[in-house]
Length: 439
Image (cartoon, rainbow, N blue to C red; front, side, top):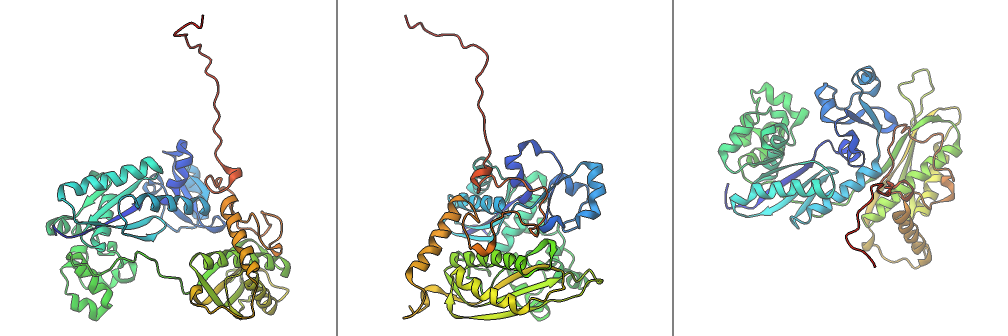
């Protein structure tokens, strides 16, 4: 495996919890969970909570008694903070390699290139130390000749304490040693989807899968699993995607803190989603030809009347303008709204997307000043915080009675001016002796 370019995978440990601890160092040893939208389910756990056996995704009400017993602190999700910290994490990694693939909010692949074997572990330690020092986030680093082996190395760096957060798979013997230690479900891309079937075939460990026939894997599971086996053997099959592919559909939706019945409140909610969706649309340089609007009641409340409508509205011309998209969304909402129902969720899908720079300039269309206005709105929201300016239809109140429940949300320390951490300096009372006289 030596003499070839390497791949590094850097993964933040317990991302959401770790972000919270950066600004609350007093919580360094406190058991913490971060909850999903409307404080529903556990989506991030500190090591202390994992040790108590709290599973990922469990509804919060099911572990509330356990939380009281062990003094687990439950925090509402703070996506503005997590997104900004993720940007800092990715930006820091650019100092180590220009070849980068952002895999998720807390994971990133780096192309390391060929380098002396004696320097590779030092590189991993340097990455880990730099991110801890510059941002405050704990990470693990896995290195190997393929993306799948880098993922496996990262998994070992997390699970095996003696590795101290860094693992380099430098030889087939190293791979065999680690692959024998972990179940097949821990392979990147296998998970629960294939693991039961693979186990029934006698493939219980990652090493069992590594030794399996790629041809049989392709026959039973498809080409991707066959490629995974080749990657476990050190043959690179999954290429880097340095430039993320444009999304084919952009969705913005959210459950309400309280059920809504009025068209006015639903219109406010839809306008918020149109604003968010159009910002994402402009960020990737795309325009939409159509928008789908949907609302829904609570399917779990069987005593309520049920209604799950949706409608697609085509635009006269492809657009990324919040106002044009909102006009179409408002038309769609009026079509599907029916009084007498308790709506618990609403959202939009921006569909039939295409690159804006490939669109011909229309002879008759929105004047240039309209596009400039949207650019100014984006700049103001970027600088002074989201929702600083917006459409009047969104309403004036920042906290609405239907807003998502986030009863234990921490401040947006890095994205909202009025929520910045304040640091106070006090004069030291001890008198400092003079080292010289001014006479």
